[in-house]
Length: 498
Ligand code: AMP
Image (cartoon, rainbow, N blue to C red; front, top):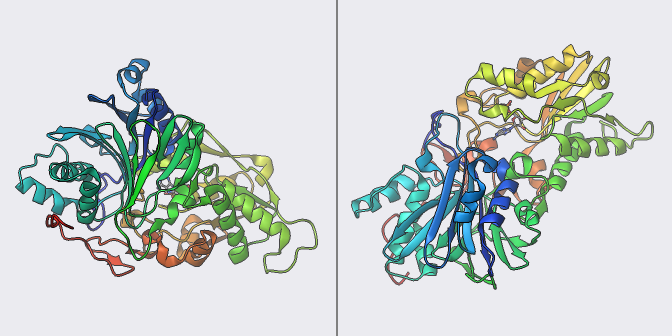
C-alpha cells in the first residue's frame, strides 16, 4: 500500500469511496448502505459500515459488492444514528480481508472507525515508530497506521488537536471519514488530492467522497471539504464545526477523478464532472479534430467527451474555420456495451483482458459500415481496449478508424488511490503517440494536452496532481521526481504545545 518504485502486481493500490452520517434519531445504517451503493463505482472488492449507538460500536465488513456484502439482518444489527461506510477496490491478487474497511478499533479512550480513500507515502515510517512504542498492528495497511496514531494522540489531547497532530505526521493522499465514539469526522489531506464533500440531510449531515451519494439520500450538497480541513459532525445531527488544521501553498487535486473515476453526476471541487468531460471533448475537437462521417463514444466512459466533441464539430471545422455546411459530424452510438461484464481492467492476465473487451463491447454495424469513424474514449492505460476496438470496428466495415482520447498519455503509475497499472504495462510510458497509433493500428490518434485539461478544470497546472501524465508527483514518493518543493513531515512526535 505504501508507495516506492513501481508497484508489484499483487500490491494493493486503493481507489475507494468513503461516507459518514450523523442523524437526529434515525439509524444511520440504511442511509450509509444507500450511499455506498451510490459510490459502488469507486470500489467493488469489499464494503463495510461502522456505527455507534452512544454506548458501543458496531461493525460489518464483507467482501463483494454492496448488494452482496449486507443482508437485511446485518443492517438491523448496526445500531446507532451515527456511522461511516467504505467501498474498496485494490488490484486483483490482493484479496486480504484484513485490509477491508472501515478499520475499527477500541482503545482506552474510546472506539475509532476509519474509512480512507488515498494512499500515504510515509506509513512505514510512522508504523515503525508506533510499533517501537508498543502498538501492535493487524494489517500492513496505512489506514491502521492513521488509527493507531490518532488513538495515541487521543490519550493525551482533545479530538481536534489529536487529528491535527496526526495530520502533521502523515504524508500523502487521504480523504477520511472517521468515527470517534458517536462523533463523525471528515478530514481531507492538505493538498486535497482525493475528493470529499459535505451535505445536509433533512435530519442530519453527511460527508461523502462524491456528491452523488448525497443526492441519493435526498440531501443537498453544501460544499467540498477544504484541503487540510477537519469537519466534525454533531452527534445529534444538529450541525457541524470546521477547523482549518493545516495550510498548504498549493493544492493537488487529482485530474483523473474528473476524466474517468468519478460519476458524471457528481460535483467535485465545484465542477460538475459531466460538464468538465464535455469541455474536455470540445477541447479535443479544437486541438485535434478530424473530419469523419461519424463520431462515437466508447460506452460509458467516452460518452460525455464525445457529445462535447460533436457539439464543437458542429460549430467549427477541423482546421478552425466557421462551419457553414452540413452541421458537423454525426454523433451516433456505434458500440453496444454488455452491462453485466465487470471492468476489463481488473482481469489478471492480458489474454483475459482482451477476451473481456470483446465480451463487453460489440459494434453496431449500421453506424460504422462503409464510414470513416472517430472513436472517443477518456483514456488509454495499457492499450488493450483501443487495440481491440480498432480491430472490431474495422471488422464491422469501417473504412477509416480515428481515435481521440480525452486525457493526456498516461506515462507513469498513480500512487495515490487510482489503480493505473505498472510503468511496464502502461503503453505510453515508453512509446510516442505515433508508435502507439501504429501499435493499435488506428488511422490517426490524438490525446488531449495537459494545458487543455487544466483549462477545462479552471485550475492552474500547479494546483493539480498530474503525476500519471508527467511522472512528477506532488508528494514525496521514493524513487520518483516531485513537481514542486515537497516537505515530507518528520515522524517525530509533535511537541505538546504545537
Ligand atoms: P486499457 O484498455 O488498459 O488501455 O484501459 C483503458 C480503458 O479502461 C478505457 O476505456 C478507460 O475508460 C478505462 N480505464 C481508465 N482508467 C481506469 C482505471 N483506473 N480502472 C479501470 N478502468 C480504467
